View 1 (tube, rainbow, N blue to C red):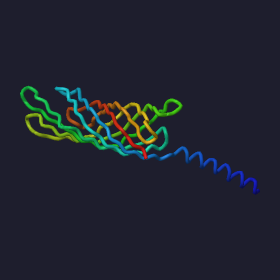
View 2: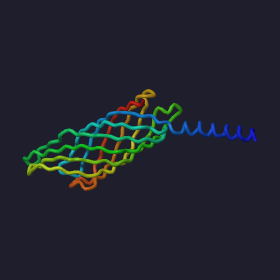
View 3: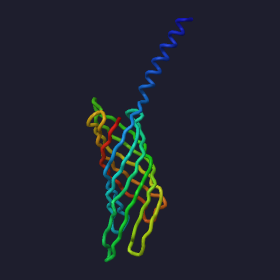
View 4: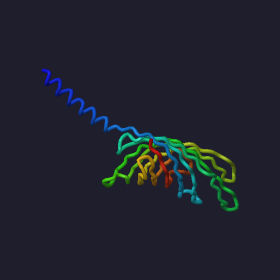
Length: 180
């Protein structure tokens, strides 16, 4: 009887140790530069923005992050009229990582998420604003410079819901993150 209890305790300890290794919460913070390109508009709109984000890696394959993004004020002269626009966004993204190589310093990544976009514009006829959801899907790569510092590049396709004249746009990001 005591041998069975000892064997059960040993198996339980091994199972708990392996499951503790499976979930390794590693919080991180970071910032990135973004180029958002809206090609469906006339003229084409390329807006520069920055993002700050906070996230966690649950293990070496999966993580989530929340972000805030704010753009510069884009402006252009169209047919003698000055057109202006800017936006802010916040949301949640899930990440999947595919570590490559023996050292696992380079990873391919995929991301999917949802964000709220607030656009302000002045089309020459008057000022306005629009608010709606953006469904985000992207792919990229990450290079771990050290155990704590990584640089990443991501390309995202964003499908906008209920934003007038903005059905979809592309976003190109280059960022730096610090993992605790």
